[in-house]
Image (tube, rainbow, N blue to C red):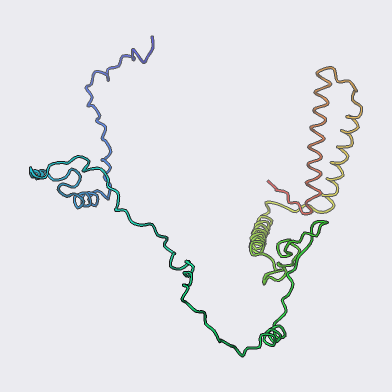
Length: 259
């Protein structure tokens, strides 16, 4: 039988035990409780939403008339535009009105026009470009051909974000160099010399040539499981050697841990 349903007999089970009462966590009380109470009390007012408790009874003489609660239209007025006085034409002259006669001026219009044209500043033609064979013109400023950006104050200067990025890279390199120096002083790592690096690189390339020679000697038809497994194994080993060779060729300085 299960021990959970029928626990093993023990003399300690005869000793009465006190029931352990779990203490509940204190109830959460918001710190804005008093403020909410004050706001609620201040917003209360008698008859605020339901109206007065007792309404005066209307007089019998003021009984409800028919159509009295329907909306009434405003009184009819003659239509008139708001800007009639500004845009109205003058009235037609009467038959008795006489035009002004005998008005003369000493202004020489020919001479005035000639002087104005002589003293006028010639207008500069607006730059434009033609984009069709029919001669359709478009403004040159919106075409992208006007060198606007070279006239800016910060033209040719390195952007701020690139300077910030360059400073972050320099600090990271300094921290890495200091860490490497400390580790080398402790003897925990050493730098791989150029001759050793060259030997390791040549050995990796020789291993790759051997695996490649074996790979070239495989059967053309892969029709069995061992042939397929051998081909996949050779491809995996060659890829790993290629990754190692690429890593060593990209990094001129290599550190080796002594642990």
